[in-house]
Length: 365
Image (tube, rainbow, N blue to C red; front, side):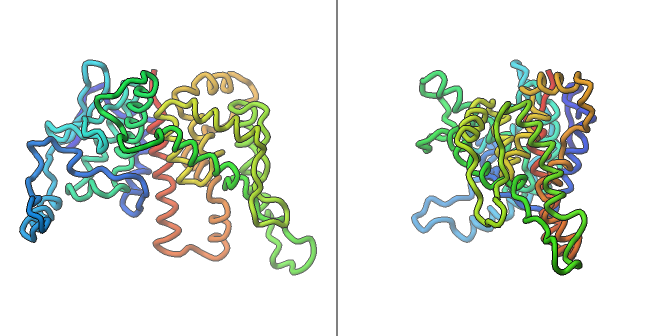
């Protein structure tokens, strides 16, 4: 049973996001780091099932561990508000912990909807073993990732050793690793990879109207226009594939430098949300558009556009992002049909990842 105080209820506009994530969790998998059972329970609650013998874990202890993981060791899930305003998710009286730092996972005061959604995420689990499956805890994993980055940013800013290191074994920072990982997606961006123009002559049965390229260009234009006018003013974004080529062409050096600087300046939650969205959709442009639409730091940009009489577009959400990233798949399956347990699973997983990114970056004043 999931409980919480009055200030941790869902904001109505976010309920569809949680519904989408829960629907996808039943059938999808993810590559994000999992949350171990060892990280969510206090020391006193962890079963002593490991043998210290040189031979390793005994068969008896393996059996005990397996039986323990099959059980749900908590009854109720709730959200507690800390004195500093941050939220903590409790499994009975035990806090959900960050798997890296082993400390209770704090959710910022502005993200009550995320804290409540994480509580629901844990309330849906039927065993401790399910906590080992990342696709069942996407919100917990993205919140833990953001918390690691918050701690490391604070350590880097103060230039003093942190009592709890987010990644003590890493030679590079999480922030620089994320930026380094995401910047190549700009050159192979799904949104900017367009199909070749349809043949002007030949077999008329192969000419479909509108063509795949027409649909891709139509989907890309408003997103690129938004980014190059409101987020990266003056930046030039070229199609990834030149006509007749199968090799992507690199974006201009100035474009890469501006986008890299923009990513480096994002706060921890928005950078981690961008990472989740880009890795899911294989599109830096779509990920950036999604984060700008929902991120707390971009409220002024949204307010400015909303006040403009020419801006009457629907909010860019899960469906809009998913459709922009999967146009070719939708076009091909529309002609030839879906592969069961493949295309349908991928479709739900994509929406789950986008939904978790939106919940991570959004917030209330």
